[in-house]
Amino acid sequence: MDTEKITFCKGGGCTAKLGAQALNRVLSLLPKGEKDPDLLIGYSSRDDAAVYRLTEDIAFVQTLDFFPPMVSDPYTFGQIAATNALSDIYAMGGTVKTALNIVCFPEKWDLNILGEILRGGSEKVIEAGGSLAGGHSIADADVKYGLSVTGIVHPDHIWANNTGHPGDALILTKALGVGILCTADRVDQAPPGAMDAAVRSMTTLNKYAAQCCSHYDIHACTDVTGFSFLGHLHEMMDGRLSCRVNADCVPVLPGAAACADEFLLTAAGQRNRNHVGEFVRFENIPFSMEEILFDPQTSGGLLIALDAEDAPALLEELRQTGLPARIVGEITEKTDPEITVYGSGNKTGIVCE
Amino acid sequence: MKKTVNALGDACPIPVVKTKNAISELGGPGSVETLVDNEIAVQNLTKMANQKGYAVRSEKIADDQFKVTMEIGEGAGDSAQDIPEECLVVPQTGKKKIVVAVTSATMGSGNDELGAVLMKGFLFALTQQDVLPTTILFYNGGATITTEGSASIEDLKSLEALGVEILTCGTCLNYYKLADKLQVGGVTNMYEITERLTGADLVIRP
Image (cartoon, rainbow over all chains, first blue to last red; front, side, top):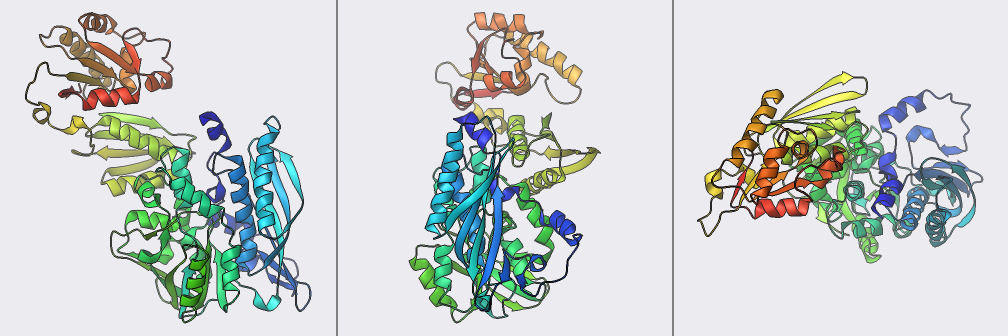
């Protein structure tokens, strides 16, 4: 079992993402064609998904996400990869319609493993209310799986990631720390039970959080994935806003802080620190909490900006669906530093599952 | 004492995990050099050193090859070996359990050639003592001393004949590809090593 685990899971999920710095350099060099006015959201804002307007009432939302396994069980991996891929549609305020599988799988491996991955994935597509409509598979040295998902959204109700207002409250709907925990698990050092909570979190569709949000005027929304809470928050600030984060209120998975204190850290987490660290000032934050805030999340929660007056009611709704959501901070006028994270010294967020 | 960790080709957090293991095997002051093949791993190791208060420096020694050196000061480890010997000696109730932990092929730090001569001398001198140790544990670099090519095999065989338990760490034998070259004593695991160390009245680390 141990050898199978090592072979199947080499440290995947969103920790396998290319660094934002490397990626931005390449993307900025791409030739840009004539701008299509109906392409409402594309590369330029580094949003979660592309949005293209078809009619006055309908735009389609397109996204693609796939990665290597971050857990040892193929079925669970399928569920997580699909939950993560579907999430981008919800982060735009959209509804899932169709999904296509993307698979890389070693030719000589037991096809039952592939079957389990795809079963996990298709169950999540069904739970999302979408239809699995096809796919593409490649023989490769390592396993990778994900989905290309298409959804729809009303062009006037797109939740962009960079349209928050000063005075907005920031709500996070899932606990942080899955990158650190999966990494600790890979070297068999995750605390007992910690992975169960992490897997539950990674397999929870953001559909439920998005449904709660649909009753409110959401100013901006993104899902927290490989670039970490602070990385996605930085994108949300869009160079024109700033924010203050109360680290004591940030939901954190059980065991994540302990693993961070053991330095069971990902390379992606350090890349995130290199990329956005200069925009962040930590006031009274222990090392482990800094690491959790830079930790790449696989299938993380939604990060929502909305009017501070609406926030308590939305929070209540989110919590009633069983999500560990918290108000984690507020958007302010632009200041230097862009992101201030303050805390009470040795506290590492609120531990929630 | 100095240890070198080869973490070339290892993805995070393996370089950190290997380095932490090396530091705990040092069991006290010394330095650990870790070789890695990417700068992010250098940064993650440096973060750990800074948090732990170890002096740290890193250098690029080739394309895709970096060396991170940590200096572990006094009181850095938390194993029994850090406790001054007089604190480990409990009031004598029957025979004292003395465990010798041989963690390296050499004795002391400085020159390795000299260290190897000293280690051979130490093991020979052990055979001449009135009070013999209960157990001698060989782990990490110590595994080379119980295996083919070691100059101490005869001394260890006579100690074994005198009732001294000789145990070598199996993981270490595998790591150094010495599993089929063991010449004296038995093979053990971390559970047993830990049990011998924690159950000892006195731990001697040459």
